[in-house]
Length: 501
Image 1 (cartoon, one colour):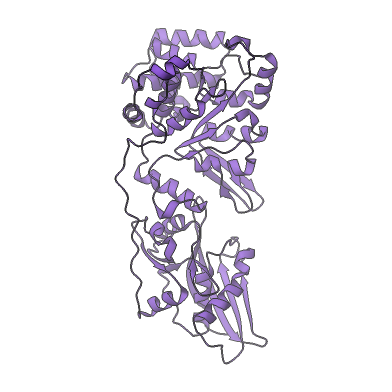
Image 2 (cartoon, one colour; image 1 turned 90 degrees about the vertical axis):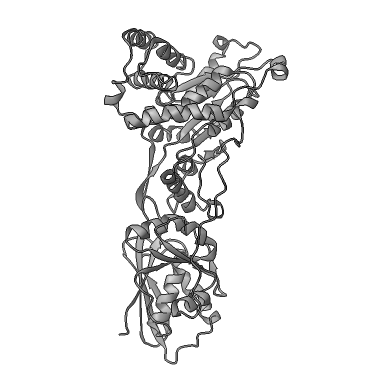
């Protein structure tokens, strides 16, 4: 039996990447063979041919004696997926055959091999490097295209290798690779947003609802005739959310890295905005699939998830929003395991109930009410905090109305309101029940809320949501007390019986 060598790698995953040790052992045997074991998927099993071609491309001679080689990925009970282990497997092969010295155990290796020996980029490098640092492995070699992404983790020393031969020269000390550095960040321009509120004419009550939603993290429904600006309002909402903090940016960027969506290795500083089409499948929305990847709900984490034409979505997809709307997480259970993804996104839904020629809300066709109610179940209606009708804007208002308040000014109020909430421990939409009851409403405000709850048949969930919204309105006004006008405005955002099943 030959010497057993060990090379450190990692399986990118969520909530935490898994440390993987590649063990290699070669012994004399006829016929020669190369076996990869340790619960590999198809991509890992195919690494055998990529490794052989890449090693030949590096100029290594064939062994003088036939070798039976075994490469084992431990722990054996964790399924290994993707081509991320190619480099570690190749190093274990070369070291077990005596071509190179075993790599140090304090260095981890990630990357896919091309047949010519080049290193190709892989997904999840940011998440992988974060996990390695937690395991006290602070030196990592990745493909050159992933180097800037890995360098976002400041505690790690990351080297980007363009090819297997360049990596071998680095390990031998012949030609050390340069240490990778993050892509320089441009100075933040908070004035630059995709859609600025000042450019949206009319519907001031809808703009007010956007501010409340952004300040407290409240979910929002926009409904009204087509062409009235619901999509513009939803896109403007992303522009009044505060920039991500450093820890939030790393968290969101790691999720995007796992999905293969991190742009050029840059840290995501602005809250994400995701707008999946209504034909999106349930798995694409909530996450999962064969490789348990995050879905649109998770990719909108700490940002905005916009579901336009929500009544056209599959009913199962809409009902899948129940858990993230309530808890800020989404649980994906499959045969190969269960993953809990973060999903603290601000959900905005929009739809167009048809009403014929009349524009009075009360004259919506009962059949249309039934159609909407069939898609939006009672539990979903309960979990959406703010319901806002977006009306048509007269042509003269479009032409003559002065520019409104810019998004930057609204964002500053949102920041101050959020700061007040975070001093209490969480945004108002995420307040625990015992703290909701301490929102400090005035006696007359509490009396009004109780009467409204009886008259409008509020569930217990809706009762507490209205109190949370009122608390957010008070925070925007920097008031310690929830007064009667705050409660009245919060109650006005409930849908009453309009779209209840």
